[in-house]
Length: 366
Length: 228
Image (tube, rainbow over all chains, first blue to last red; front, side, top):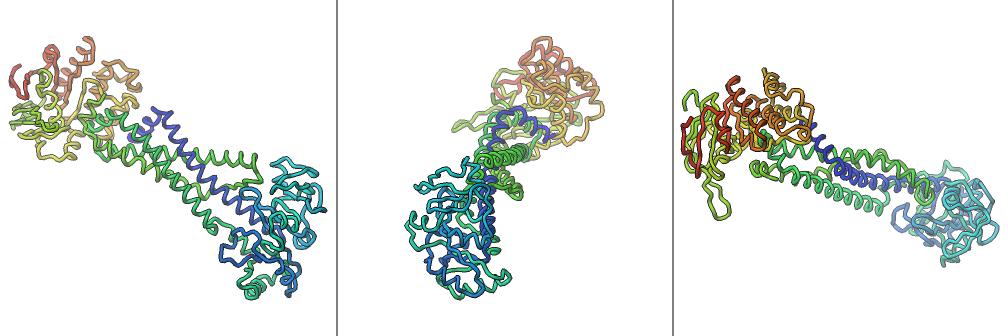
């Protein structure tokens, strides 16, 4: 019977119920979309790292995380040194430069890169011929309605769009290394070296050898290890950001449910008096409000998941290149628990206020 | 307490503290209500009728004196025990009906039944509903019922747990004459047919005339303990 009372109470003020659940839903959506975006971006980076065709990445030995971004911290003179090492078939210098919020432009020596990557798959146009030639991936071209032959302004520079390649190889933007070095004032500086071995089976052995040989300058990591490290747990800044958003979500959930329940308690003062007169104990009164909060949170969670799916569809339609977003169903229970936690916190004070209400005063409340 | 007494009150005092002022709502009330008796309590506003009603119903504790309801000493009960007493021994009927607006008539009755820890309606409750004339209106919410119907649902709700006492506070105060007569006749019929003990507060001498006995209160005391 208590459950029926809870449902009827929520139905009675259905606009407030729906709005409260919707705000909880937006809170759930913000968590799930953030996780989906973070994972999407990391997965996208992992896919592109694999798509280079390299066996080993040599990155600056800065003590930062393996997947942290660095601009021109490596001297280009390491490239011929690495290329001369045993079992190295090809060493390719790469300079990375952010051009949008999370999108990188990579400068490479294109013919050398083609050798290790096995050749980019061009959907339109072809390899860069001049210093201002730009190659973009399919997702960027689709999102921005770009066609070969157009001029694209990036990094305050006009590029000639020479080719559109299949997504998932190296970067969204590929340009000649020298041009990018000049544009970013990084002469003879690069971000990393891609290494192709003559026998991929030797990767682990060569990683160990490079780490001994280049200690203090460069750190070697196999592509498979690098890809496995593309997770939220390995990006400290992202972890902090997600915690902040989660904390905000708990606060928002708490405030929304608090306000909703507090209003309900004030509005239903007389009804609480009736329940007490009928023999409802303080625990029963709290129980009713907590159940209402739980229902609000659960309906909010369902709305949140629906909103997340809708948000993903919109994002992939509007910005497939800038914001690669994935599903995060394993986070549904976590987001639900966060919403439920906020809702329960929000129900505590109104519940206690209702339970403490004097029955006689409540019955005379107009 | 005699065997027949459902309520026995001796030297009952109730003092409310409001700020620095003590308000003596009851100043030594003595009262006996027999088992199966229909008692009307009359008196002007501020005479202590409602305070007596609240104390007998376990909604407020007495300050001094002895109050026995169906053998239970209310002064000795904790708040929790008074709540439990309300679940099983007391049925309330209020002037403003006090039905929960979100529930149907049936669910209002079922909620009281559930709080009284009863799994089903008591034997003979269908006859009570017939007597009250609301059996066909149970699926409606209070807003779809007339005042008279709402009060009859409230009486059904008060009776569903077969309470020792039915406490009615101005049960006809919000009703027109026809509905008042209907409700008062029902209370008298219930009292006669089921021997339900009823204590009814009223301002109206015509309503009080339906009771077996009437007492008058003034200034926190019972003036006429045994007028009939």
